[in-house]
Length: 398
Image 1: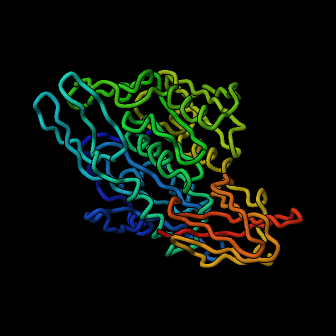
Image 2 (image 1 turned 120 degrees about the horizontal axis):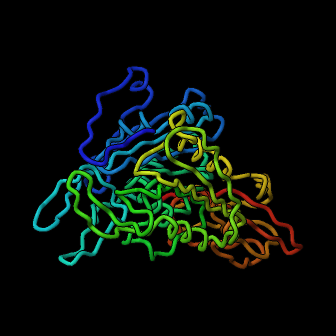
Image 3 (image 1 turned 180 degrees about the horizontal axis):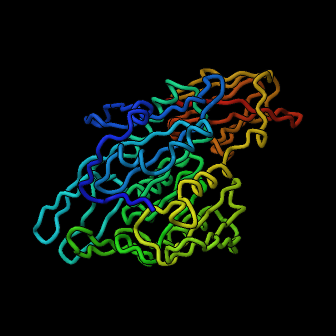
């Protein structure tokens, strides 16, 4: 197993070869200079779009430790994915008159209402915006496959992955959370898009309780109360929103490691726009990141396999860049004009095929205003008066 300490963990810089490939970057966002690690695999080819994987560390951890320990570097190299490991900002928690430094914490919507007050970690930090700003930088620098952007995280990083999916799911393909659910500050929010989601949780998690998302501090054993949904409620949130099958496909992993744990996967398929929801239940599992050979499964491998099963298939919606109509401007910011012959209607679709708006055409042209749509990759689909449809890509920049 791999342990990611949730308070005040400082890692000694590891192997020179590792530090050379995970490049430290800075980005000014929200008036603060933020940090992240960027890993571009040797297999990256700028003639082929590369998927992106965001890896979000736990409470009090560092980007360096998580990038080194989570197991995704080898996966990113093998499959040609760009890996981003950002750093959260420090946070304090006021409990019973004590101002407790918590270490680095994402503004993930982790919130509890106690008898004394309501507390939340970094409520004024816009980490969704920060992470999407990193993505914008990647798009400007590399050939990024904007159809295939993924996020995963441990503990509060798992909470952050869920918040990212709710607020910016139109720019993501799928997320995976480990030991971190959906925070109370956001668990009644309507997601902006249907998105595939995986959740992994141990039934004996003493930090984020499996049943109700209650949080207990580790260094100072103070029970805070529920800070988010329970594990099964988190799965239900995504399964129900995506309208996945009610009955899962169940896989019980071989139980050969002498670790006192059993692992079972519940896969709910056939959601809207081919989304799916997966849950790995770890009986007797603690607030830890499990891996082989000490355990029967490797979390990084299972998360990658789930993401790989969600990869956008560009044959589902055929693009025809040679079609006899044009989009101007492209990339666009606030408005686009589509010009062609004998067009009956034009539709704006997001990256997973959802129809965002339908606009009738005046035979040869129409206009779509983009103020309500976030930055990202979209499709424009025209339908002619004789029923023929064609698609072209549109990039919205903000």
